Length: 96
Image 1: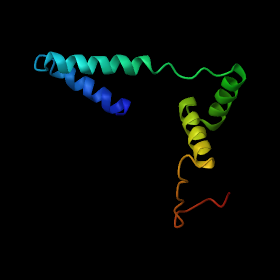
Image 2: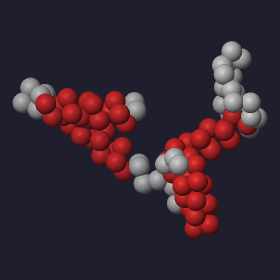
Image 3: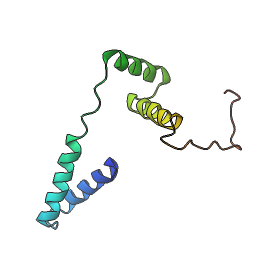
Image 4: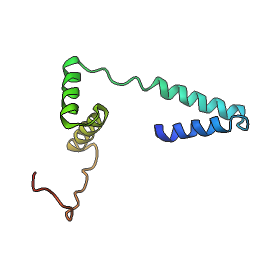
């Protein structure tokens, strides 16, 4: 379950709080607590933090987006994820 879909489930439960059975509400609240407990993030060395922040600023993307890109490309390069297919018919600007 993604965070977005879980957030929608929480909002839906809040909208129908009077109609939701207590055991179902307990399950939803326990899942919310577990999810919140597990989002602490990753502690990085200061030099790594600085490099990520500088590169994200240079690329004009969020730090989170940069980390997703780097992680996905590393997983693809090391064969943990299948390589994405490039659409041969797509337009390019001529740079590699």
